Length: 188
Ligand SMILES: CC(C)(COP(=O)(O)OP(=O)(O)OC[C@H]1O[C@@H](n2cnc3c(N)ncnc32)[C@H](O)[C@@H]1OP(=O)(O)O)[C@@H](O)C(=O)NCCC(=O)NCCS
Image (tube, rainbow, N blue to C red; front, side):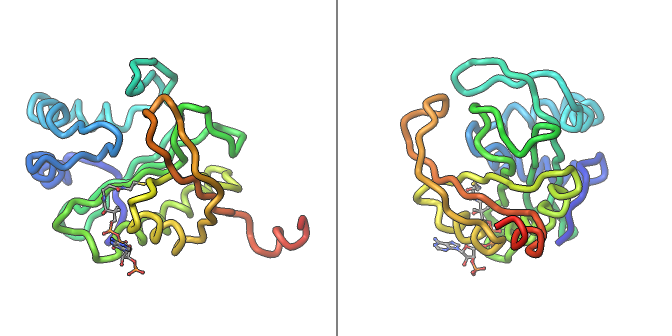
């Protein structure tokens, strides 16, 4: 499996995943609206997906600036899933409305093959390259697969928390230290 930048070449396979009801967004199911957009204007859909800047609308209706981001599709000859990294330039901190630096989702027929674990491993390299030293990932108490994926990639559990913007359900916060081990030892 490799990570690819979303493109027209990969779009038919992505659209086929959307058509099954799969959603790349774990908070809101966007499969139907994305499928409409893909069919209306394939090139425009890819351009919108990759466009930096602008705003996003949160589940509670709040509009917030869109952070810098990298989105990649998991590809094994067909579309397998997506993963994205967002961050604030010059800091490891995130605004309170952002649930973690990285989000990922694998389509049901491609699960259990290590794709999400491998995608996260590859995305950590990108995270280092944009200057992040410490990365935050959140998941849910019942999402044992995601907890395992984060732990396999060096994640340390920090706390259980509630973010009211996303409702009353608790989330788990993990940290992945991206600094080289020797640097960590010197500063400890
Ligand atoms: C969570 C998700 C991304 C996993 O994708 P995947 O490609 O199947 O994951 P992987 O194959 O890389 O690895 C999953 C790991 O969790 C383990 N696992 C899977 N289901 C599990 C379960 N119910 N309980 C415990 N461990 C589980 C696997 O055994 C594997 O660990 P291993 O490598 O030690 O064997 C996928 O199920 C998904 O897209 N779910 C919906 C969206 C989502 O939850 N995204 C994450 C939001 S934080």
